[in-house]
Length: 425
Image: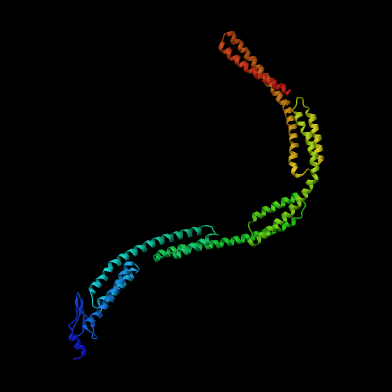
């Protein structure tokens, strides 16, 4: 008999609740279906054999415990968790280990409902995220389509780039929905880009046309800059400025240069004109002093005209003499012209007002109308007096009273008419 055989024979067969070692060294594990051989251990004692296969069980239990923790924490996706449970359960069922394999398998089976709940929660979460993503993408599409229909060429392109970046960060939807929204979004971007390019092409054409016009205007302005025909040339510059504004902007790189040349030509002309006018104003300053002296004499005529028995003809002759002296005095500085001319015009208007008043008072047509009115009133008064005498004789007191009132009114009108007629005479 060998030493190993002798050693096993000297020891009683080793047993534990979940397994045993047979006399021939075969190790068995007990399950719900009975015993199952898990291997043999001939290198040591039965106790060592059970310890070896128990450690294998402990390793499996450690894996189950770790998987339970990972499932409970939610770190594993439900599909990955279910796959891990299935794989580990197959290891437990066919494990070459000694221990409560049934309980270990039951613990793995208990993870099934937990994973199902997590799967439902994940599904609901995905559905919610999909709904949010869809709403956000529909919002992006709506804004992109609004930009495509608008004309915000400056900010629209940047905004569409921002919208595209946001789109890429959003979760995908189901293929049909995602593709449909993307087609709308992409079409809006394409439409906007096409319209934007067309706009800038047209704008470039307009700016180039404006450049040609402005170059012509600059040439004309520079040709006029040395003119000394101050009035006509100033009018021509105003016309050129209207054309300049109507032309619109030229390309940015030349627009400022053309404007500087155009403005420079204007400044040259108007600077020369202002210098000439300043010299003339200095020359005309003495004329203004003469005209102020004439005004003093002219303004004295106004209160004389308003006095009793004023001689209009004498005043008119005096004003004509003053006007001749006024014209002979010559031009005055431009900044004094309005003031001095205004004062002289007021004297002229005062004389004309007195003349108009006298004419109104001596108007033959008005005098004739006044005489006609007097005759009619006198006839009316005579007729009313006759009626009053009859009413008095008849003792009709009420009618007599009414006729007396009527007679008084007519007499008052007659007095007014006679006064007016006297004024016309």
